[in-house]
Length: 109
Image 1: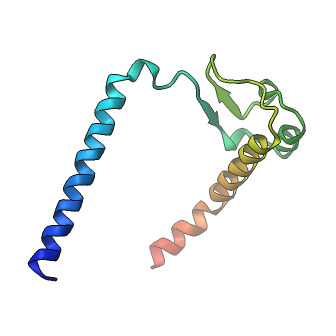
Image 2: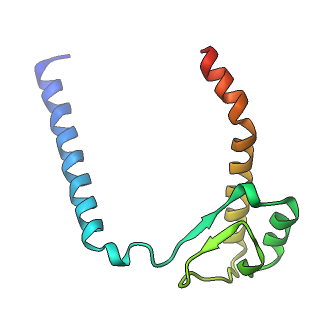
């Protein structure tokens, strides 16, 4: 690589670092508004019945694998959002099952 290319890459990295610093400073100054609404998924506690019920019911209070803030919406009427939560939990459950085989493969490589 030439000196110009290295300098160009260094400038790009400095710009990215500067933007990240400004982003985190803005988040820190707005900390009281940071987590007023959240939805936390606990895939270890989700059963197949819970996942199927999620697809047919918009009431999240019935599920034990979803934790949410007081200000979060407890009723998700949009099927696309419930489908996204369903897919997210299924993907997390698959990764939980595959963690040991993936660890062995990573150790061998």
